[in-house]
Length: 337
Ligand code: SF4
Image 1 (cartoon, rainbow, N blue to C red):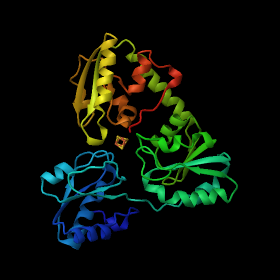
Image 2: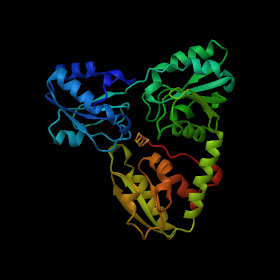
Image 3: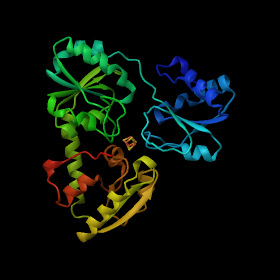
Image 4: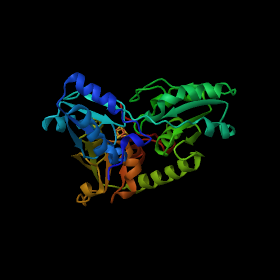
Protein backbone atom coordinates (compact mmCIF):
# COMPACT_ATOMS: atom_id res chain seq x y z
CA UNK A 1 0.00 0.00 0.00
CA UNK A 2 1.29 3.46 -0.82
CA UNK A 3 2.03 5.81 2.06
CA UNK A 4 0.03 8.99 1.34
CA UNK A 5 2.70 11.67 1.02
CA UNK A 6 0.31 14.46 1.98
CA UNK A 7 -0.32 12.82 5.38
CA UNK A 8 3.33 12.62 6.46
CA UNK A 9 5.24 15.29 8.35
CA UNK A 10 7.23 15.90 5.18
CA UNK A 11 6.37 18.67 2.78
CA UNK A 12 7.10 17.40 -0.73
CA UNK A 13 5.77 20.62 -2.31
CA UNK A 14 3.79 18.72 -4.92
CA UNK A 15 1.80 21.82 -5.95
CA UNK A 16 4.99 23.85 -6.50
CA UNK A 17 6.49 21.01 -8.53
CA UNK A 18 3.32 20.78 -10.64
CA UNK A 19 3.46 24.56 -11.25
CA UNK A 20 7.07 24.30 -12.42
CA UNK A 21 6.25 21.40 -14.76
CA UNK A 22 3.30 23.26 -16.27
CA UNK A 23 5.18 26.58 -16.60
CA UNK A 24 8.25 24.99 -18.18
CA UNK A 25 6.08 22.63 -20.25
CA UNK A 26 8.06 19.57 -19.21
CA UNK A 27 6.54 16.36 -20.55
CA UNK A 28 8.90 13.96 -18.74
CA UNK A 29 10.73 14.51 -15.44
CA UNK A 30 12.66 12.38 -13.00
CA UNK A 31 12.51 12.38 -9.19
CA UNK A 32 15.49 11.65 -6.96
CA UNK A 33 15.06 10.93 -3.24
CA UNK A 34 17.60 10.02 -0.57
CA UNK A 35 17.03 6.56 0.89
CA UNK A 36 15.15 7.85 3.94
CA UNK A 37 12.43 9.45 1.82
CA UNK A 38 12.11 6.84 -0.91
CA UNK A 39 9.09 5.22 0.75
CA UNK A 40 7.13 8.22 -0.47
CA UNK A 41 8.48 8.32 -4.03
CA UNK A 42 5.66 6.37 -5.69
CA UNK A 43 2.96 8.45 -4.03
CA UNK A 44 4.67 11.74 -4.90
CA UNK A 45 5.13 10.54 -8.49
CA UNK A 46 1.48 9.56 -8.87
CA UNK A 47 0.31 12.91 -7.46
CA UNK A 48 2.55 14.79 -9.89
CA UNK A 49 1.35 12.70 -12.83
CA UNK A 50 -2.27 13.29 -11.86
CA UNK A 51 -1.74 17.07 -11.59
CA UNK A 52 0.33 17.57 -14.74
CA UNK A 53 -0.03 14.63 -17.13
CA UNK A 54 3.79 14.52 -17.38
CA UNK A 55 5.55 11.16 -17.33
CA UNK A 56 7.42 10.79 -14.02
CA UNK A 57 10.51 8.58 -13.60
CA UNK A 58 12.05 7.72 -10.21
CA UNK A 59 15.81 7.31 -9.75
CA UNK A 60 16.62 4.37 -7.47
CA UNK A 61 20.40 4.57 -7.25
CA UNK A 62 21.74 5.26 -3.74
CA UNK A 63 21.81 8.99 -3.00
CA UNK A 64 23.21 10.64 0.13
CA UNK A 65 23.62 14.26 -0.91
CA UNK A 66 23.22 16.89 -3.61
CA UNK A 67 26.81 16.04 -4.58
CA UNK A 68 25.31 13.04 -6.34
CA UNK A 69 22.69 14.15 -8.87
CA UNK A 70 20.92 11.80 -11.28
CA UNK A 71 20.63 14.49 -13.98
CA UNK A 72 22.87 12.72 -16.50
CA UNK A 73 21.16 9.33 -16.36
CA UNK A 74 17.73 11.00 -16.24
CA UNK A 75 18.61 13.06 -19.34
CA UNK A 76 19.73 9.92 -21.16
CA UNK A 77 16.32 8.41 -20.42
CA UNK A 78 14.60 11.44 -21.91
CA UNK A 79 13.78 13.46 -18.79
CA UNK A 80 13.75 17.23 -19.32
CA UNK A 81 14.31 18.07 -15.65
CA UNK A 82 15.23 16.45 -12.36
CA UNK A 83 13.52 17.13 -9.02
CA UNK A 84 15.99 16.40 -6.23
CA UNK A 85 14.51 15.95 -2.75
CA UNK A 86 15.99 16.35 0.72
CA UNK A 87 19.05 18.49 0.02
CA UNK A 88 19.94 22.05 -0.94
CA UNK A 89 21.73 22.88 -4.17
CA UNK A 90 25.42 22.11 -4.28
CA UNK A 91 26.54 21.63 -7.90
CA UNK A 92 26.55 24.65 -10.21
CA UNK A 93 26.38 22.92 -13.59
CA UNK A 94 23.94 20.19 -14.55
CA UNK A 95 23.00 18.52 -17.80
CA UNK A 96 19.28 19.26 -17.45
CA UNK A 97 17.60 21.75 -15.07
CA UNK A 98 17.55 20.49 -11.47
CA UNK A 99 14.87 21.76 -9.09
CA UNK A 100 15.48 21.27 -5.36
CA UNK A 101 12.79 20.29 -2.89
CA UNK A 102 14.52 20.58 0.46
CA UNK A 103 11.75 18.86 2.46
CA UNK A 104 11.79 21.17 5.48
CA UNK A 105 10.40 19.75 8.73
CA UNK A 106 7.76 21.45 10.86
CA UNK A 107 9.04 20.53 14.35
CA UNK A 108 9.07 23.31 16.93
CA UNK A 109 12.23 23.16 19.06
CA UNK A 110 11.21 25.84 21.58
CA UNK A 111 9.53 23.53 24.19
CA UNK A 112 12.62 21.28 24.27
CA UNK A 113 14.91 24.31 24.55
CA UNK A 114 12.78 25.86 27.30
CA UNK A 115 12.99 22.66 29.34
CA UNK A 116 16.78 22.33 28.96
CA UNK A 117 18.09 25.89 28.95
CA UNK A 118 20.48 24.95 31.76
CA UNK A 119 22.44 22.74 29.31
CA UNK A 120 23.55 25.80 27.34
CA UNK A 121 26.44 28.19 27.88
CA UNK A 122 25.95 31.96 27.77
CA UNK A 123 27.52 32.56 24.32
CA UNK A 124 25.96 29.99 22.02
CA UNK A 125 26.29 29.25 18.30
CA UNK A 126 23.35 27.70 16.45
CA UNK A 127 23.81 24.97 13.86
CA UNK A 128 21.49 22.67 11.96
CA UNK A 129 20.87 20.82 8.70
CA UNK A 130 18.85 22.07 5.75
CA UNK A 131 15.64 20.48 7.10
CA UNK A 132 15.52 22.98 9.98
CA UNK A 133 17.33 26.12 8.74
CA UNK A 134 14.03 28.03 8.63
CA UNK A 135 13.60 27.89 12.41
CA UNK A 136 17.02 29.20 13.45
CA UNK A 137 15.89 32.83 13.47
CA UNK A 138 13.02 31.93 15.82
CA UNK A 139 15.42 29.99 18.09
CA UNK A 140 17.86 32.91 18.10
CA UNK A 141 15.16 35.37 19.15
CA UNK A 142 13.89 32.97 21.81
CA UNK A 143 17.34 32.51 23.37
CA UNK A 144 18.26 36.19 23.17
CA UNK A 145 15.04 37.06 25.01
CA UNK A 146 16.31 34.78 27.81
CA UNK A 147 19.68 36.48 28.10
CA UNK A 148 21.86 34.34 25.83
CA UNK A 149 24.31 35.79 23.35
CA UNK A 150 23.55 33.95 20.11
CA UNK A 151 25.55 33.63 16.89
CA UNK A 152 24.50 32.06 13.60
CA UNK A 153 27.34 31.65 11.10
CA UNK A 154 26.87 32.86 7.53
CA UNK A 155 26.50 30.31 4.74
CA UNK A 156 30.02 29.15 3.91
CA UNK A 157 31.78 26.23 2.32
CA UNK A 158 29.11 23.93 0.93
CA UNK A 159 26.29 25.44 3.01
CA UNK A 160 23.53 27.43 1.28
CA UNK A 161 21.95 28.83 4.45
CA UNK A 162 23.14 30.55 7.64
CA UNK A 163 23.77 28.01 10.37
CA UNK A 164 23.75 25.04 7.99
CA UNK A 165 26.35 22.29 8.25
CA UNK A 166 26.83 19.26 5.99
CA UNK A 167 28.64 15.99 6.67
CA UNK A 168 31.57 17.32 4.60
CA UNK A 169 31.43 21.03 5.46
CA UNK A 170 31.52 22.64 8.91
CA UNK A 171 32.80 26.03 7.69
CA UNK A 172 29.70 27.83 8.93
CA UNK A 173 30.34 26.66 12.52
CA UNK A 174 34.08 27.26 12.34
CA UNK A 175 33.51 30.87 11.26
CA UNK A 176 31.92 31.72 14.63
CA UNK A 177 33.78 29.28 16.89
CA UNK A 178 35.97 31.98 18.44
CA UNK A 179 32.88 34.01 19.44
CA UNK A 180 30.95 31.25 21.24
CA UNK A 181 31.47 28.98 24.26
CA UNK A 182 29.34 26.12 22.90
CA UNK A 183 27.08 25.14 20.03
CA UNK A 184 23.42 24.09 20.08
CA UNK A 185 22.59 21.68 17.28
CA UNK A 186 18.93 21.67 16.29
CA UNK A 187 18.08 18.47 14.43
CA UNK A 188 18.57 14.74 14.75
CA UNK A 189 21.43 12.24 14.41
CA UNK A 190 24.97 12.51 15.75
CA UNK A 191 27.16 12.84 12.68
CA UNK A 192 26.78 16.59 12.08
CA UNK A 193 27.16 17.66 15.74
CA UNK A 194 30.10 15.29 16.14
CA UNK A 195 31.72 16.92 13.12
CA UNK A 196 31.19 20.36 14.62
CA UNK A 197 32.61 19.24 17.99
CA UNK A 198 35.75 17.97 16.23
CA UNK A 199 36.05 20.86 13.78
CA UNK A 200 35.65 23.59 16.42
CA UNK A 201 36.87 21.94 19.66
CA UNK A 202 33.78 23.44 21.40
CA UNK A 203 31.12 21.54 23.36
CA UNK A 204 28.03 20.73 21.29
CA UNK A 205 24.59 20.16 22.81
CA UNK A 206 22.16 18.26 20.58
CA UNK A 207 18.50 19.27 20.75
CA UNK A 208 17.05 16.26 18.96
CA UNK A 209 13.64 17.59 18.05
CA UNK A 210 12.58 14.45 16.21
CA UNK A 211 12.99 12.27 19.32
CA UNK A 212 12.52 14.88 22.07
CA UNK A 213 16.00 14.22 23.52
CA UNK A 214 18.92 16.39 24.61
CA UNK A 215 22.50 15.08 24.73
CA UNK A 216 26.02 16.39 24.54
CA UNK A 217 28.73 15.06 22.28
CA UNK A 218 31.74 14.85 24.59
CA UNK A 219 31.59 11.12 25.28
CA UNK A 220 30.82 10.27 21.66
CA UNK A 221 33.67 12.47 20.52
CA UNK A 222 36.14 10.65 22.83
CA UNK A 223 34.88 7.24 21.66
CA UNK A 224 35.08 8.34 18.04
CA UNK A 225 38.67 9.53 18.43
CA UNK A 226 39.67 6.26 20.10
CA UNK A 227 38.23 4.31 17.14
CA UNK A 228 39.92 6.53 14.59
CA UNK A 229 43.27 6.37 16.38
CA UNK A 230 43.02 2.56 16.40
CA UNK A 231 42.50 2.61 12.60
CA UNK A 232 45.43 5.04 12.20
CA UNK A 233 47.68 2.87 14.37
CA UNK A 234 46.84 -0.23 12.27
CA UNK A 235 47.87 1.64 9.14
CA UNK A 236 51.28 2.77 10.38
CA UNK A 237 53.13 -0.23 8.95
CA UNK A 238 50.93 -0.63 5.85
CA UNK A 239 52.94 -1.10 2.66
CA UNK A 240 50.30 -1.12 -0.09
CA UNK A 241 47.57 1.52 -0.27
CA UNK A 242 44.46 2.01 -2.38
CA UNK A 243 43.70 5.71 -2.87
CA UNK A 244 39.97 6.01 -3.51
CA UNK A 245 38.77 8.49 -6.12
CA UNK A 246 35.01 9.02 -6.05
CA UNK A 247 33.22 9.14 -9.38
CA UNK A 248 30.21 11.12 -8.14
CA UNK A 249 30.48 14.66 -9.50
CA UNK A 250 30.43 16.47 -6.16
CA UNK A 251 32.85 14.00 -4.54
CA UNK A 252 35.77 14.21 -6.97
CA UNK A 253 39.14 15.34 -5.68
CA UNK A 254 41.57 13.99 -8.29
CA UNK A 255 44.33 16.49 -7.47
CA UNK A 256 44.25 15.45 -3.81
CA UNK A 257 44.19 11.74 -4.73
CA UNK A 258 47.25 12.11 -6.97
CA UNK A 259 49.06 14.16 -4.35
CA UNK A 260 48.43 11.41 -1.78
CA UNK A 261 49.66 8.72 -4.16
CA UNK A 262 52.85 10.69 -4.77
CA UNK A 263 53.32 11.30 -1.07
CA UNK A 264 53.01 7.56 -0.37
CA UNK A 265 55.40 6.66 -3.17
CA UNK A 266 57.93 9.22 -1.95
CA UNK A 267 57.86 7.42 1.39
CA UNK A 268 58.52 4.08 -0.27
CA UNK A 269 54.98 2.71 -0.07
CA UNK A 270 53.00 1.26 -2.97
CA UNK A 271 49.91 3.26 -3.90
CA UNK A 272 47.20 2.71 -6.50
CA UNK A 273 44.41 5.04 -7.64
CA UNK A 274 41.05 3.26 -7.50
CA UNK A 275 37.95 4.96 -8.89
CA UNK A 276 34.39 3.89 -8.20
CA UNK A 277 30.89 5.23 -7.64
CA UNK A 278 29.71 3.40 -4.53
CA UNK A 279 32.41 2.96 -1.89
CA UNK A 280 31.23 -0.22 -0.22
CA UNK A 281 33.01 -3.20 1.37
CA UNK A 282 31.61 -5.40 -1.45
CA UNK A 283 33.25 -3.24 -4.11
CA UNK A 284 36.64 -3.26 -2.37
CA UNK A 285 36.77 -6.77 -0.97
CA UNK A 286 38.76 -8.23 -3.84
CA UNK A 287 41.70 -5.88 -3.31
CA UNK A 288 43.12 -8.44 -0.91
CA UNK A 289 46.70 -7.51 -1.72
CA UNK A 290 46.23 -3.98 -0.37
CA UNK A 291 46.78 -3.19 3.32
CA UNK A 292 44.71 0.00 3.66
CA UNK A 293 42.62 2.57 1.82
CA UNK A 294 42.61 6.36 1.83
CA UNK A 295 39.32 7.90 0.79
CA UNK A 296 39.26 11.20 -1.10
CA UNK A 297 35.50 10.93 -1.89
CA UNK A 298 32.68 11.51 0.63
CA UNK A 299 34.31 11.86 4.09
CA UNK A 300 31.18 10.54 5.73
CA UNK A 301 31.77 7.08 4.21
CA UNK A 302 35.21 6.92 5.84
CA UNK A 303 33.87 7.82 9.25
CA UNK A 304 30.49 6.12 9.40
CA UNK A 305 31.14 2.97 7.37
CA UNK A 306 34.77 2.32 8.37
CA UNK A 307 34.01 -0.65 10.68
CA UNK A 308 32.35 -2.48 7.76
CA UNK A 309 35.44 -2.44 5.55
CA UNK A 310 37.84 -5.40 5.66
CA UNK A 311 40.91 -3.11 5.71
CA UNK A 312 41.48 0.21 7.49
CA UNK A 313 40.02 3.19 5.61
CA UNK A 314 41.48 6.61 6.47
CA UNK A 315 40.78 10.22 5.57
CA UNK A 316 43.67 12.17 4.00
CA UNK A 317 44.36 13.90 7.34
CA UNK A 318 44.38 10.57 9.19
CA UNK A 319 46.87 9.19 6.66
CA UNK A 320 49.20 12.11 7.46
CA UNK A 321 49.06 11.12 11.13
CA UNK A 322 49.75 7.46 10.27
CA UNK A 323 52.79 8.51 8.22
CA UNK A 324 54.11 10.76 10.97
CA UNK A 325 53.51 13.93 8.93
CA UNK A 326 50.91 15.36 11.32
CA UNK A 327 50.64 15.12 15.10
CA UNK A 328 47.81 13.22 16.85
CA UNK A 329 46.80 16.49 18.50
CA UNK A 330 46.24 18.07 15.09
CA UNK A 331 43.44 15.61 14.21
CA UNK A 332 41.00 17.28 11.81
CA UNK A 333 37.78 16.29 10.11
CA UNK A 334 38.01 15.89 6.36
CA UNK A 335 36.01 18.60 4.60
CA UNK A 336 35.26 19.31 0.94
CA UNK A 337 35.44 22.64 -0.91
S1 SF4 B 1 30.13 14.47 -0.04
FE1 SF4 B 1 29.09 13.15 1.46
S2 SF4 B 1 28.70 14.47 3.22
FE2 SF4 B 1 29.14 15.81 1.47
S3 SF4 B 1 27.13 16.30 0.55
FE3 SF4 B 1 27.93 14.49 -0.51
S4 SF4 B 1 27.05 12.73 0.60
FE4 SF4 B 1 26.86 14.55 1.95
